[in-house]
Image 1: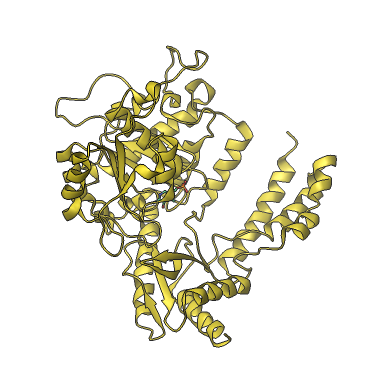
Image 2: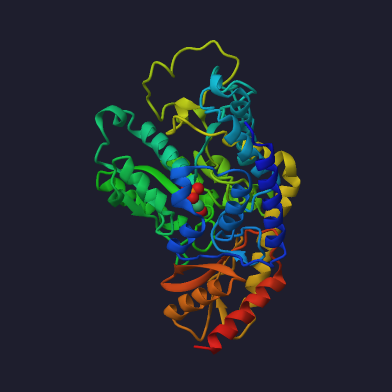
Length: 478
Ligand SMILES: *Cc1c(COP(=O)(O)O)cnc(C)c1O
């Protein structure tokens, strides 16, 4: 491949891009109209004629990056996407260059080995027993009753939730795979749950209507006191609870459900407990905040996104199981060219995944953790949560602003007091046009909020003070 110069040029352009992002000199996002953008990129002509290399590639890249969102920018506070490190980018390049679809060991031994070691690392963080190196199947656990955990990396948390719920369905209704889903299964999940939960219910054949509301307090957090009553009511009506999902943390406001109480209830009631930690499970790396997930050890499964707080470029998430037997019966597969007894020195993940071809997700995750070390990664996570708490205190102390709830993660919901719901959105639009700050927005407890997900490692409290000033200036123009 004649690519050394192109790759070096691209790396140099990305390096300046990164510098302009962290300094805050460039706008945090640009959304040019799509028609003129495609013309500037000369996209149509390039598609038919080719020739995108050398100087044309460099020019194209400069133009393209001008219409991007800068996740390393101190004003980036919008959606839960990682601010990637250098090694994550390099891993993506390696993955693209060698293209090893590593779901079977023979198609990518090192990537499969790294997925195996990363899954074990995550299992340990969750308090579950990892498999011995290289042994993802095999003899039953030692006799202390604690099973050997298992898991896999998936292209995203939505797929991890679907995978965990498929495993839950296989436990309660093993016949569903062949016969179709029985009509008495329900899922218990809070209204604040991520939409991928109701999608999974649709895809698994329960139907989104069978997601029943978990009793919750006003802030959307599950209320374990009322759980026994809800489950009794469901059971009295002849239905069975296939799984109960708790948020760790919720997407809108970043609040953690009381995982410990829910877990012990589920254990006693014989209900599969899935913890959706897509965003918030990364707190496990922080000694200060890992208590938010107390009780996780008792749960059955966990979704944990690496492309949110672990700084890994998309898409990389994990579906983890306390007992690997649970994931090993989730899928019943056919395909004699892939699934057969092999005499090989490694592990196949393919029997545990929705995907057939899968990129080297373990490589991206491994190279990111191994660049930083888990201590520095934990310190980054802790610093973002600390910042959210300090920001919320500062906002709550300003007479013209209010916060929705005290933050528990790196997410803060707030609004200008002297503005209605529609005006909060107008404020956001003006901020985006200004290009210095990029917050998101959400509905929560019946009202519209500006929402900060503090993902960028460069954001400081004085940036948030400057954001409040800019909002005041915008509001005075209404
Ligand atoms: C982000 C998120 C998801 C979805 O994960 P993707 O990786 O975006 O598919 C699911 N649940 C929660 C709680 C999340 O924060």
